[in-house]
Image (tube, rainbow, N blue to C red; front, side, top):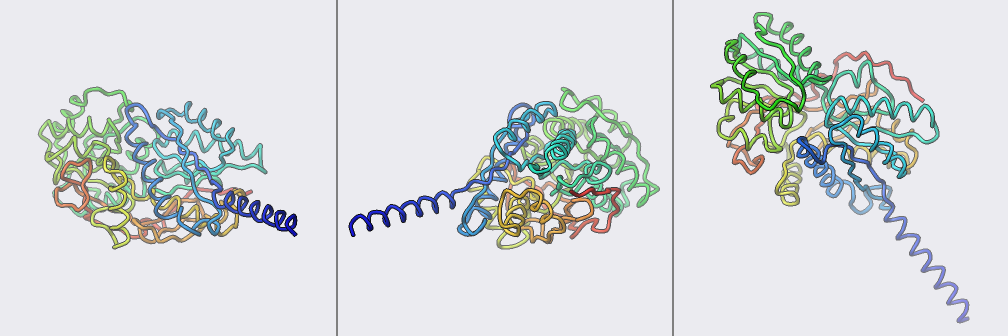
Length: 414
């Protein structure tokens, strides 16, 4: 009897150990973005948003596969280089990671999309999925679309549609200057600005449309002089990181006191750099909002983010949708290893985004459709950026922005 009891106890212990191991199964997500160099703040902020969302909304008891698994973010520094990103992608895949997250730079996203598609063609039984949280070149969900890529941010055309609505409603704007970084995203912003302004306000004159080298301009003063000299009533730019700081400071320092419409003109040191000078001038178009918080749950989520990461900002609200939607897809499939089934589960998914409201992953092109806001820099906010005493406040809110917009995507599914 004692021997039987010992065997039963041993079996029970083994079962408990196995159950504990199952409960601690890690679903690893490779985060491939800049964590060093001039754009490191963008990547560091993004990683923090992921980790906070995972901790608050996914890694709770019974949330993922009935508590048998949890997400783990695994950071890889790509130094904002497409070449380095491909190296880090291979390193991640060599470690067995099959879920890739990236967003800083559409050029990088394009390289990753092509590499992942190539891998999946060669390895149909071992595919990789790409969760794009902020690379917004429209081509990625149009001519370059592919089944394994999902974009959770509004693309630059969707954002420009909302931004130019704001411009079109302002009769004081008669001349616009467009300036951006010389790569795929900057070119997409310029093309969309031309197209939408022509449609909505054909009387507006585009008095400048130029691109500059990304991350290489040390002094934006010559560009600022041209903008002021053009007589522009507004500026549109897709600049981000150090290029946004340099351009904004130079333009406002040259005496320009009219609207500067941006895609990334806040947080990551940008708001602090602009300071009081940017109040009432700097505008930001983006998916979702932080100020004001769209709901009590959102308020609590934002507050807990700043408690956990007091030196960072929740500057990319749409990123809070990625992990919960991935978790919902995994739960629907019933396991975290069937990547193809998870991708199919994401198609057409509807999600109540904590900071974006109703969000749909459009089946036709894997483009998220969600709330887009045009915001303005002001000291009158609940949640400040960069500990600067100011932040961005939603002024125009467009729910399910561009939900019926056309796409040239011809999705080929496995």
